Length: 194
Image 1 (cartoon, rainbow, N blue to C red):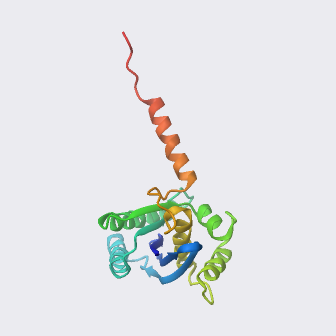
Image 2 (image 1 turned 180 degrees about the vertical axis):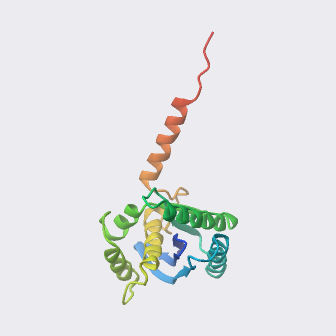
């Protein structure tokens, strides 16, 4: 039995996409990989449509059972983070339309899962992706390798065929949600007893 996972490295100019099959014993096989490109001078709504159409076609062709997406985080370049967030929204919508679970993973989680080192560089990640999937060389550009690394991270953190857990979040993500719930409870208005 295998699990098919779509990994997406969101970006407006280059959106990395990778599909893997995860087998028992933490083995994985490449199904498809590529990059959806849109030119910077194209209107934003058309760029998002190009990415959405490509994702829809890929999801229809490969029928993944889960989606792994890079978690958007604050960067110094506001324009870059906005484009990443907009593409992430397109991915989330495409997954929701198919009732697919989406796992959000930080870059350091992905690096640690694939290389064993949360501060690995892109070259190290690409090399390990190629090694894990039995490829002669890392997929290029790096966005393609990053998408496959996201899928591998998601698989190894609880979404593969060897687990029956319905929550495919990482321990850090579960702890974060628990802390948010705790903070919400402590900040909730309290009714005074009379």
